[in-house]
Length: 323
Image 1 (cartoon, rainbow, N blue to C red):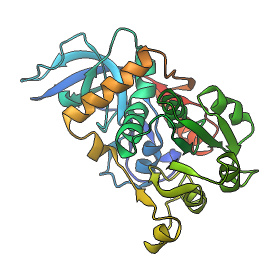
Image 2 (cartoon, helix red, strand yellow):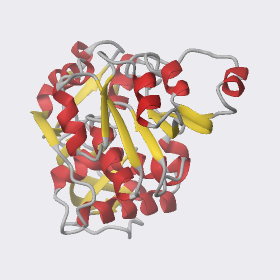
Image 3 (cartoon, one colour):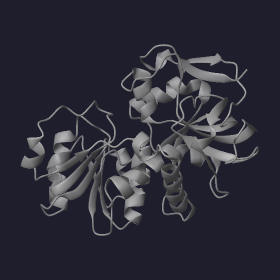
Image 4 (cartoon, rainbow, N blue to C red):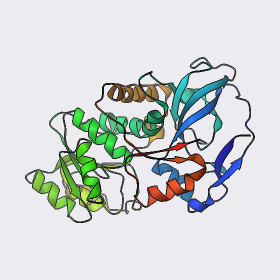
């Protein structure tokens, strides 16, 4: 029987268990997938802790890559032997699993499995952040928090390729060089500098068109102060805690700002949207506009150790779990 990482209660990394589970045959519209690489994402932490509600018991994770081993009835989008990648399908922390075929995307020959698992959820997220939530274009100046993280590295390279001036924040001096190497024109250590003041200095007092913020509580008010009038605040994570409640008039007071909290299930829930995001991601990976750094790998059985490193902000770039 295949091994999986499962939780029976919410809590710290210690609640994750390495156990055997029987694997059912794929049903109608499903595929049996032998996994070769599994992506680690902060949403996994939110699900483990209960910040994002999850039915228990639950196999962790929602992103992976592998090889199709069997097809359920009615599946025509993929064939046995295809290399595929997916995201948004709970149950990824497993050696072998059953996946809805509609979530699977065939991998181009030029993208290996580990890169796909490291990049797919993060990269399709970046696709809708930069191309749909706020359409980044040449001449824009953007601020991206956690620029040395897995999402940040992809986003900063991609925004630079779109012609934007990119300001990134990081939490340590060691990560400043990483952010610069991944597209940032300017890098700010938000632990030692007032990032809002530095953004105003960099922009000559004008501010930026958009702030992308996955840090949350610690950066929210400062992020609003970085925006131009009519600018957009995009909150897509809570690494430091959830954004505090605020009066809506604050957006008016800060410059008639816009604020949004995009989610993958709305931007990528339709098959056509997922395919379009995947195509845009594969294009920048293949042409070299975006390069993926896999900063660390862990055996799947050591997923708890990987979660600790992620929560302690000791990871750089993407993290991949290997079955």
